[in-house]
Length: 271
Image 1 (tube, rainbow, N blue to C red):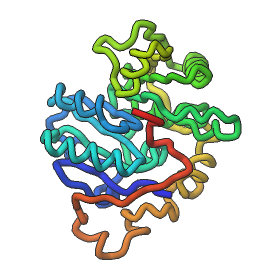
Image 2: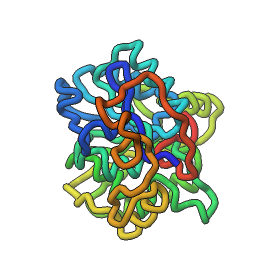
Image 3: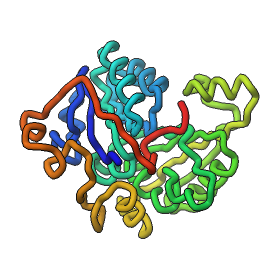
């Protein structure tokens, strides 16, 4: 299981823990006037397009699948997208530890794994246990954009968001203004497959405190200790996990390790 191993920026990648946590986003992309986050960017179609179209905004992408992370990092380097930071790791772990609170104007979550079986539903990215971690990334007045082709999961997310304090939720029945945002969304739109799209607005500042059930689930998924404090999470990149040679000098490189995890909170099911 991989918790948080790599950060890609400026054409290279290295251990995310070589930098201070929470990550100093303002120092990494000084020109950014605002930030957006995509959780589970997959093949990076939407994230790369947004970063290229908005050079004065900063973008953070989280993905757990190493092959998607590497390919998107290569494409970002070819396009010289200096306003884009890519993190490979578990989304909930990174939200709880590596990313600052209330930094993003917009959080994008498109086609996450719906985990349809009842005994797997605690692994969902948007669940009662994880909602506060995800919403905690938003600035007051920020918004979360979500899409799924799984009716049961979509309705559960809509009900969850509608019942949460300080949140307002609405549907996008006609699709996004610019059209499909992922390859699979384009495919399903062409096939006439129904897609539920939601927009959540953060009406007030919520405390960045996880749901009481979130920390045990997070600890079980990522190998963290009580209270969300990192324990032996086997990330390969932090001072507790990496050999001394990897802890000095940052160790930035162009390659990456493969990851495998039973908890895929950092990856879209498809993109």
